[in-house]
Image (cartoon, rainbow, N blue to C red; front, side, top):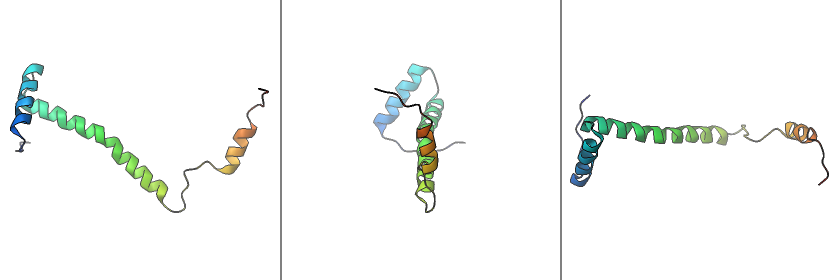
Length: 80
């Protein structure tokens, strides 16, 4: 898909130089840049969704107290 965007001249010139140095087209450079940006921020959406889920009433992200006690009891006592 073709699209038109507006960017400052200095950014355009830097992108042109980088594309030439990497031996790729301008389109390829922008595709890679956008893909990288999306991947970088993808985890933020997951974190926000999980935070929203665990902030809801009735849902606890903590360990069940009975399980916590059983885990503690299963560890052998050592003298230090």
